[in-house]
Every structure is written in structure tokens, then in C-alpha cells.
Image 1 (spheres, rainbow, N blue to C red):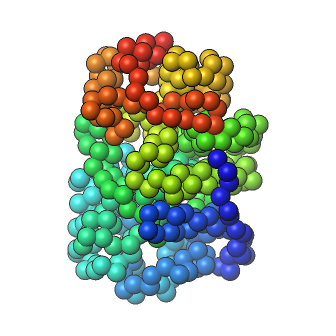
Image 2 (cartoon, rainbow, N blue to C red):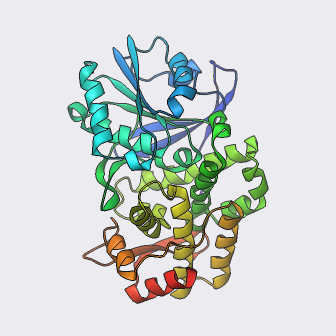
Length: 375
């Protein structure tokens, strides 16, 4: 998959250089800004609507650390700027937390021009985007991802949702942001486990779309673990380039975009079965990619060397490769709820070769055999 065009634009607010990556989705388009020092730089927010009210939606961990920086960057853009801190964690990506956003918007007298800023990881981004799509039938929002996983995946492409007790991300809508602002400085504050979980989503893009990128990740694995700024910047940029290309070709996941769910059919089943938040999303996806690559080898699409190569790379980042012990029927029931399933048939993203993926139905017996072999 060829690279997208990126530009390097001086950031007048901080003196830094930022990269601007365009995303074309449906009838609209927006930019992803990638660079250091973007959060409190006024230039990062130039061109966005100047409404009477802006709302920063964050969580109780990120808010105390970063909300004041974002408020400095947004100074003068809104007559009133309020901050809503939600409880932290995947377990709170639910109706009750969604209603807290609606309560705040109504109590603050927010109108259709109000701009929401999702300051946080994937949970904050997903639930804020969902709320923005529903409140008064739609208000604008901006993604300000603060985790590696959110910067390279969940903040881009307009997927928004909340979880249901019976399945992850089962209730939601497609709602594209006005902009995505990825400040690389904030990644240095992440706990090791959260950062490693984000690397899983970086790794994903290599086997499904760019064999050269997978080779680059392997060659720079140590630098990525050490959070080398240049390595992180390239990883975020290339991941966003690939996702932007896929989203531009298939905004609503009717075909090509399904490949971005490599490892997710297994991974979502793990998250649902073990309780949301027990496994981090990236951890579950990493395990799921190991299972999906093993499945690809089992049905004869790739050799076992590909399976072993991917598992070794993910394990080198400290990511779990052994799936939880679940009854076969539990695995199958949960995976049949996957959004790629058709008429009860479970469909998996599999590798046809390194750098090219496809979606295929696979017999239940083969799937269970792969899970048992990895357990």
C-alpha cells in the first residue's frame, strides 16, 4: 500500500515542526496533525469553529495532567470552555457514562455549535464521538488522543461506540471528527503496559498492508520500546497513513476496511469474556493477531514462519500470546456477534501473505483447534 502525501508545516504556537496528514472520508475531509508540543499550541486549533461553548471531555486520570494545557491552546476560541472528567477505563464505556456527557451538555446550555474535544485514549474518543453524533442530532468534535493506541488507530476513521455487556462496541455510529491532533510528547507519560498495548496496533499495519513497515518495526523494536522520539514519530505517521488510505476507500466498513480488524475477532471475544478492562484492548488484539496468523497458516495461506515471526515480535513488546481458558462454545458465541459475521458465519481477517490480508469464513472446528493449540 503506497504512502499518502504528508506535509511539514511550521507550528507558529510552539516553534515545532508538525506533520499534516489529510483524511478523505465520505463527503468530508479532515487533517491529522502529528508532532511534539501540539496540545497547547494555538496553531493546532486554527481553522476550527469558534463557538460560544467548547467542552473538553476527558477522564479522571488524563484530565488533571493535560486539560489545562489544552485549555491554553484553545484560549480565545470559545466564550466558555468547560471540562468534564469521566471515570477511567473500558468498564465505563457504557450507557451510564454516555448519559453523563449528555447531562453535562444540557446543564451547560450547549447548542448545536458547541465543539467537543475528546482528550484521552480510545474509550474517551469513542464515547465522545458517539455523544457528539447524537446530541441535538449532531455537534462537531475533535479527537485529541493521548495514548499510542488511540493515536494510531481509534481516533482516525470515525468509528464511535459504547460497549454492551454481551459484546464490545456493539452500539455506535460512524462520525468523523473535524481534526485529529496527535501530540507525541504525551506518550512519554504512559505506563509501560499502556504503551505496549499501543504497539500492538502499530504492528497490525505491517502484516495487513505494508511488508516493509513490518520489517521497519522489527528493525526498530528496541527504539520503540525505549520510546525514541524519531521512532515513535515514524510509527505514528505510517500507521495513520495506512489507516487514512483504507478509511478513504471504505468509510463504512463495507469491504476493504474490514482488514483493519486483524486479530480483533478473537480480541473482542477475549475482552468480553474476561470483563472489559481485564485485558487492555491492545493486549487482546495482540493475542488475537497471534491466533489469526496461526489460522492463516492452518488453512494454507502462509507458512508457519509468518505465524512465528509475528508472535515473536509481539512477545518482544511484552504482549500476551496465550489466550484465556474459555469453553469452545463461549468462543464461538462471542465471535458470532462480531460485526464481520454474516448469517451466523464467523469471518476472520487472515493473511494471504505478509502485507496483504483478506476476510474469509473459517470452519468452527479449525478455529477451536487453533485456540487449543495456543492455550
